[in-house]
Length: 304
Image 1 (cartoon, rainbow, N blue to C red):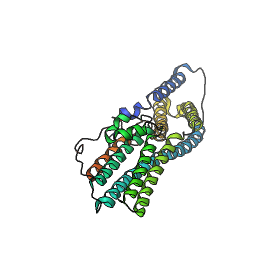
Image 2: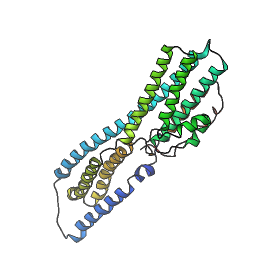
Image 3: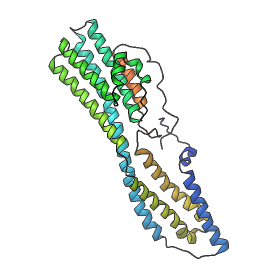
Image 4: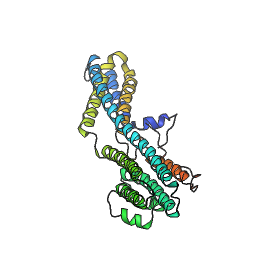
């Protein structure tokens, strides 16, 4: 996802081009019939679509708020993932730095660090239903790859390996029981953040609610030309298109925000966040490989 401060109008209105085309054709037919044919005389008081428009505005406002809450909760969860990933590796390095400076202890810390990087990438791929172990294989040992392939939930399997490594460090005396409990607490928080994202992913926004709003919106559009025709004449076409476009854009924005892990323009940028985690954790263990590589762009989308 690319955030832009200037969004082209062609992109914005491209999202509602078919709806706008329908409204334009419909309003034009109504205006032409009134001016030349006079087959029927239909006139509505402006208060009728105004009442419906008020109700529609309340429904769209509620849906937009609920959709934004889902999107923002997803972003908060990934912010927690970034913080907890840094905290976990910092504790791993600081707790075992001295006097346990054996080569085995350092390898243990690096192994856990690379596995945490793999976990961050795997969570994003799991949420988007695009799990591909080849993309994280470089961070894992062959034994770890063989272990996670036996699990449907790869990120959960990686956290299980984290827990086993912490238990091994406690048995080797590299960390004391209090330190081990503290790091286990971070693993629990990582599990919680992953669970929050999975809940958002698996909880579908009520389809009937979206359908009812869409029905009310089109009913509003069908009535609007008759209410504006007497006051604006042929210009009612432009007025109807402008008013309808505003409502359609709000509806489209809510639809995009409500699913932050579906590969849409308003997705939470999980790959970019995981890349940030990778760079930060590699710097913490002194691994400079890949630091200068640009973060992969997830798409050329703008945020709508």
